[in-house]
Image 1 (cartoon, helix red, strand yellow):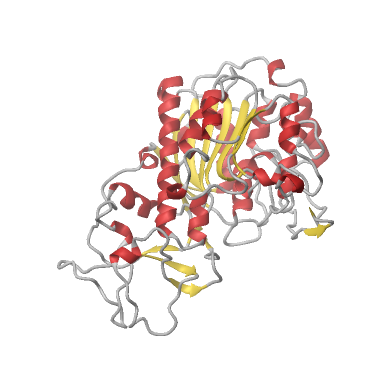
Image 2 (cartoon, rainbow, N blue to C red):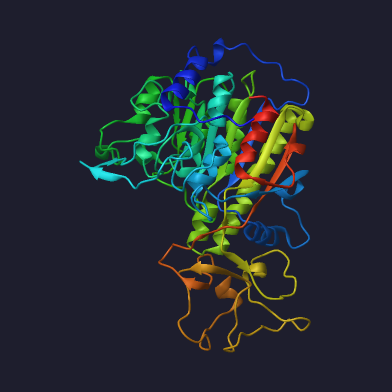
Length: 476
């Protein structure tokens, strides 16, 4: 049964009251047979079917398998939002986290909430909407039941996808307000997370937590990291500090970039940990809670690379996301053999316009000497470069929309496998957009599941139904 939207004050009071004495005051729950005591929700931002397929070919070849391919249960998910055929990340992730259809741009609010672009007053971003009400998220329900909860991402932790896990806002750009929702007892804190708040937050977005005079973006002068430290939170700023975090009940926040992480292939591993490393540390910490835990893990830069029509970067980010899923499966199978009390769900929030073109021979995986799926379309059976109507070569991967569109005839295009397989090659698009503004797509996305009650996920379902199934699987 779906939770009905509540008035914001009623919701916050109800959930805050449930957890007001902190998780330690809640009697540890013995997991029932087949019930999900632990929930890990993986979100590949923008990871449509074509991106997932191309990443598989890129990494392991056409007949290989990614870890996500091995999840025993699967479904297709409809992603349309309340007001749009093609969703944005705010509305789609909010639907997963709350079971309520949202308008594009809205973060975990009721269906009627209008998303109006915020304005700037005195250097501070201010919302222009005062409509709608907060609706409970899976993380809030978990905290109210005494479970641990955490968020891991390669984007800013205040970006739309992670924000929908723990905050409520009428517009996704209210990132300073979203950051404040994480600070227990502070102005703007989301009391529905209970007295102690989330147990860990790992990702980027330092600028939203620090004041302008300290190199951040906060015009209110608050240093949220300092506030968290006074409340007992541990702080990590690089990979070594992340690894040094002891597995205990003390909350932790790791902000490893001013805004978003660098792309996986360009990431400095000493400064920014891999998504799999953050996932492993999160499980080490959260799994100590005898009541279980809820963890959201986002591979957020898949979406960023696709918006920039950087297919190679997007495939590399998808492989990194896949590695985090493998890490979680391995660790949880050691903690909970057979995943009898653990549910792992891996999906995407929306599609993009990435295309897989032509009738090219099988390429196998990409290597330093083989461009693979990043290369040029070739003919069967001779393997010669295939030419378009203008007599020019074209690539296996392309985009429906994007910044790189040849004007007029393509007859003078000089394109080779080496160029097409370059780290920062922008694949051509059918419709030209401004730089970095390739659009989302409206196709259904793939969902894989493993563990307790994973068999509930099947067929073609709405994104709001995913919330219901996770909630029911865990008895929340």
